[in-house]
Image (cartoon, rainbow, N blue to C red):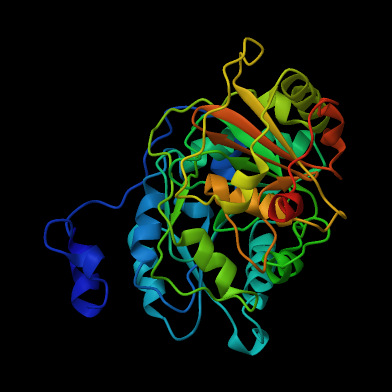
Length: 394
């Protein structure tokens, strides 16, 4: 690969891209194996390179290896301080776009400029894929989005399709075929419609107490993420570094298989998803954890397994917790600590949907449901909700 060798001679700060054993590897797109007629393969891809670009070649390599990728639809945005991004993009056949620093008073302004530019260059595009800095894409990233893209056209209450699961830590996720509806969109790699409120979403995505969805609707989230965030990359967001550091501080599950067929895609449309939840929750096993256990457990505590039940063919388990108000999340935060989900003393749990948190644990489909959730109606009358306050007071 002569062009790659010439690039590496000119720019010597990309050691992982320029090492001797890979420097001659070709950088050419893969043909699509499945979903050849999907709109995803003509959807523009926005790549944000950021201020620190030493991992950018890894991002671009995992993008060019996506089956079906068309380099003509990829725009890589960079700041003027990194003109080498243009030469790097030429190796892949991608288009480099330099951002105007005079228009970037805040880091979130970069999203606004990127979307404005992409919408001008692709005036007929209905959807856009967004890839943030410092990420590596799973092999089926585009194939995953291809299967879910039709839902953006079918269901106006879905505003985005995420490739990242906020609660996708080792031991509590990994069902590569499963997808949920959630109200948060952390970002990293995702699919949205034209007109996505990029600036507002970027500024609100890590709010301590979110009111409504910053992305303008629900997001679809995989149980097993399709993107890896490199933990040594800084986060260029005015919001909170604390919450993001908590998201990447522990081992995470990322699907690395090709050819995964997602389950129950048609049931992710809002009305059908409500029927699915009704069926799951009305037949689920209600798990009454000991209140004293709730007050002291954490992710290192071994949780008891729910009792076996003939009614749990899908292994659905529900835990109901008390709340003094809709904003009272102390019991939920303790449950998140018990299961090893995202938890932080200053921030709301991530991945909530209508006051309920759904995840996979020990092959169970688990639902944590608060008193103010519309799904609290499924709580059996003979079951008392978990309450951290009562557990502490005895």
